[in-house]
Image (cartoon, rainbow, N blue to C red; front, side, top):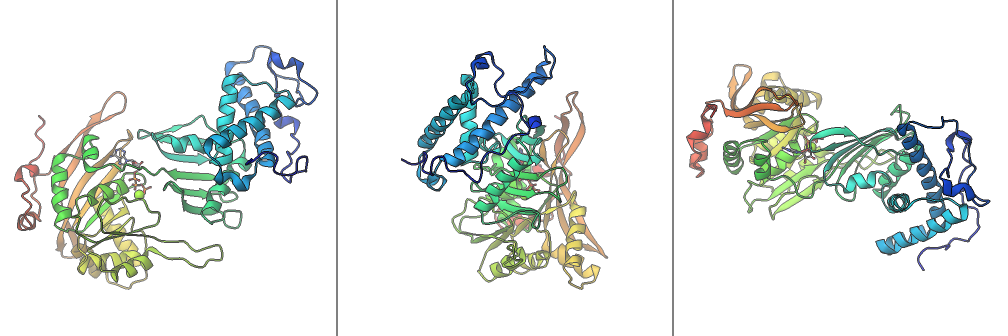
Length: 485
Ligand SMILES: Nc1ncnc2c1ncn2[C@@H]1O[C@H](COP(=O)(O)OP(=O)(O)OP(=O)(O)O)[C@@H](O)[C@H]1O
Ligand SMILES: [Mg+2]
């Protein structure tokens, strides 16, 4: 049998439940059934609350009581289950085992729970033992796209584009730390006081970042960007109103005719999603190499080589930077290179790649407008230690980058492509640009939804001739401004 009592029964476990301090020990059994609690029942604490507590208090007390019972059961399970064999048992077997061990312990201790409480308790215990505890239901809910933990008592989630406080909490900082440890040790990393932050990828592909005390002052900070199995495709984005069909026609021509494109935007504005959707316009015969810090892109083409950069290990060794990957990628005969995000010294190699035969390459940057994006590229070049006059920098950028697509997360939570701008060259010392499409805001509904429309600016693409020569018949009508019908 897989689990039960494989460890010497009665042996004291190093995890022996620590004595609860009276303050942390709310009454465990306050239900009337419990008045006949046998000898081993948890110590009852005299309630100091008024006779008719407010519903909120009652709810909080109930939650605390269940939390304490769960903690106790979890320790019992850790003592009694053969953890080494966990991977070999089926889900049903493990659930049955958890139920058996727990209900035996509950009855030994005279703790009575109603059916719903038991059901919830067994599910949560399963999540604790096998999964990531309170995070597990959030990870499994496909409607949740981001999970942001600010210490044990506060978990924000993003659902349908809206950030909201969830009612899920951790028992305490130790509980939260245990889950963080579980995540990072599974990927061979460590996080503690001397190494207080970590970036990792969960088994399901989700992006994970944690920072623990003392750097995180009020308890560990965790952010998880859930991996979406079905990435949003161009059609989905058009249907969601992220951009229009006309913009999609233009972008298709731009990608297929191998223009170099940068997707710019703020945090969580939809840059990676846009990059991924744009990649669907690449011909299946091309060899594409992708470089990311955390692999998120899901390209549909057959000939794709994926690379993931690596931070240094605990001894500070073994780092493989995005720049290392990029340099290597250039020796691997790619038709196109896609860099998930350009944020440092790799910018030099990226621009050079774009300038020298790997046209059609794409990347994303953190910036709030096309102009800002260019300034950011200049900054990155300057920071990388390359000694280049500003004008030379700009001319390098202007000949490497053809289009900047600006993504934004607007105040109502909607994500839109708010501008598509072409870089047309240099005028004196300044990079010249022309905007082709933009999102025009006109107002706000009473429930704070943004009212607006996409419009062409009326300027024809400077690549129109290129599109025609490459066989892309882009109708001139797409460049006509919105007329309000
Ligand atoms: N147009 C859209 N409509 C609805 N949801 C979207 C849209 N674009 C992106 N999303 C969702 O928003 C979340 C963030 O998107 P994404 O990862 O592409 O952002 P990002 O700008 O790359 O973020 P980061 O700066 O953290 O890398 C994802 O869950 C994604 O599925
Ligand atoms: Mg991203």
